[in-house]
Amino acid sequence: MSTKTALLATGILMFLHSIIYYLMNSGEILYVPVPGLSDSGKLLVEKGSQMVTGFNLCFSILILAASRLDEEPRLFMTKALAVCFAILMTFVANTAFGFPPNYGPPPPVALIFSFLGLWLVYVGFFKKNKSM
Image (cartoon, rainbow, N blue to C red; front, side):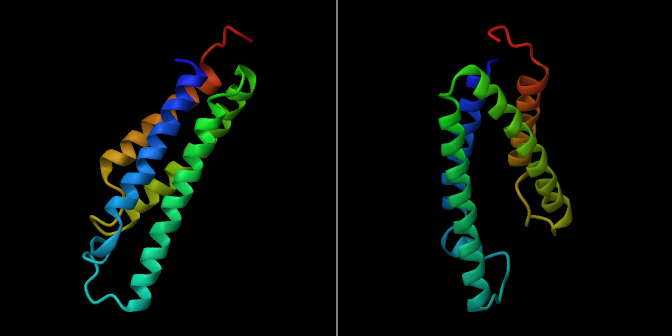
């Protein structure tokens, strides 16, 4: 379990997440849970979904690029990413438990990214690095 593997796996999962998120949140499927949504509301939901997709895609590209760095910068990026995932998971928990049923992220997605965050914490902060 190296920093390169952790960053590569995280980058690939974030890339797949951005594509799947876009496919799952485009078109009429966005408006089904909220009947009678106004045109302004639909526009807001659609553009918000596109922004999240774009952010996830850019985030994945940065993570994948970081996996190609030398070991010391990779370790730094792994630690930074672990902190980012800890912050992100607090927001995910808020939406998972604070929204009405079926409006937040699906539980498997929240679990996958929570375990991914824990893995990054382990690799970045606790695993002994032999090459440094």
